Amino acid sequence: MTPPSNRPLRVAVCVLTYMRPRGITRLLESVANLEVPADCAVSVVVVDNDPDGSGCAEVSRRFANFPFPLRCVVEPRRGIPQARNRAVAESRPSDLVAFVDDDEVCDRRWLVELVRTHRETGADVVDGRVNVEFEAEPPPWVVEGGFFERPRFPTGHVKTWSTTTSVLISRDLLDSLDGPFDERFALTGGEDTHLFQRARLQGRRMVHNNEAVTVETIPATRTNLRWILRREFRRGNTLSVCLRELEYSLPRAAKRVAA
Image 1 (tube, one colour):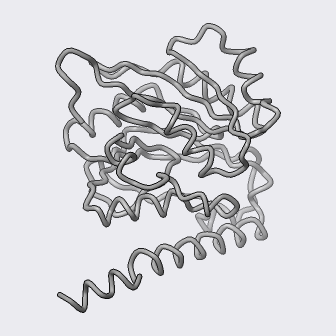
Image 2: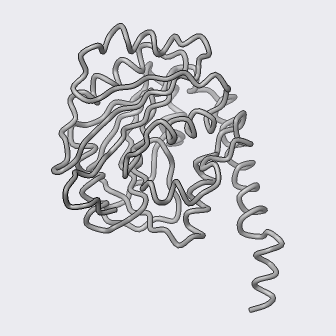
């Protein structure tokens, strides 16, 4: 997206948080140290999904003097897509929206690299590399199985999917989709998979930048068989919904027959 020549590109960094005071503090400390891409105006939006506003209270207490415009709002409706949709709305009139989670920290050049690839490729979606660290030493089988490892791609790799753990999305794409995040996924997750598959079917370009790095902390409560199996079940459920509604829906089948 190219803004009018008389103004910078407006980029909003959006963060969702829920009952993670230490996580949101660590993340915002890293965001405060981000390098600013050339000719960009950066702002930060935090959406607290705790109806009591515990996250916003922490943000107000710790970050009264933030280097970027910073706003924290409470989204009382429980659910990740509800909070993401609130972030999209609150981030207007930004040209680009970057999502990062409250269990991550950003490398100083994270935003610079995402914006660079967007400008070089014109992609509507640019995602970055997510490294992981464990809060406590995990069982050997967790490490050997690679259950928390992310696929690796070179910078410039064109993708057919993405996630919202570390991503830059154009306002044009977000405005073209209903929602844009489907709130039916409130209790299961997978709203990002659904959104990016709709983007793919629109013909939108998704590109990876391997130098746009964040580090995700994996809590000890997740390094067990029960949690991993439940996660894989949710992923399978999300994939089946996407396939049924987007790939093999009756309207798409009719188009194939007509062709």
